[in-house]
Image 1 (tube, rainbow, N blue to C red):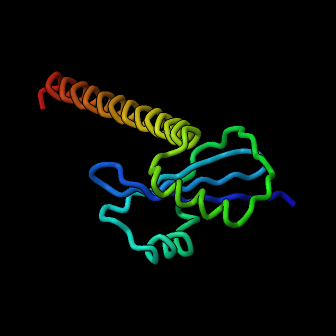
Image 2 (tube, rainbow, N blue to C red; image 1 turned 180 degrees about the vertical axis):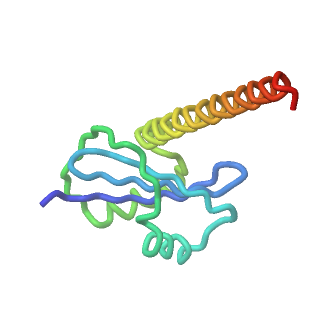
Amino acid sequence: MDKVICRAIVCFEAPFWVGIFERIEGGRLSAAKHVFGAEPKEHEVYDLILKHYYELRFSPAVETVVKEVRKNPKRIQRDIKKQLHDRGIGTKSQQVLQLQREQFKTERKKKSREQREADAKRQFELKQQKKRDKHRGR
C-alpha cells in the first residue's frame, strides 16, 4: 500500500489569503490552490479539508523525491515555527500550479476558438440564406 502525504499551506498573496494543498502519492506531487478571501480561521481551513477536499482541482502530477526521515518532535515544532514565519510557497508547488494554469488556459483557448468558428459559420449560413431568399424574390 502506497503512502500518501498531504500538506496544507495558508499564506497571504495580496489582496487575498490563499491555501495551497500539496499531495504526494507514489512519488508524484500534485497541488491545488484555494482562495479564501479574508484571513481564514483555523476551523475554516479544517472544515475545508474535511468537507471539500475532494472538490479541489489538483494539478497534473509531477515526479518528486520523497525522503523517509524520522525527526525529533521538538525539531518538528521548530520547523513548523520556521515555516509559519517563512510564509512562502515551495518552488515545486509553484511549478505544479503553473502547469495547471497553463493546462486550463489551453483548454479555455480551444473552447473559445471552437465557439468563434461556430459563430462565424452560423453567420455565414444566415447570409447565404438571406441571399437565396432575395434571389427568389421573397
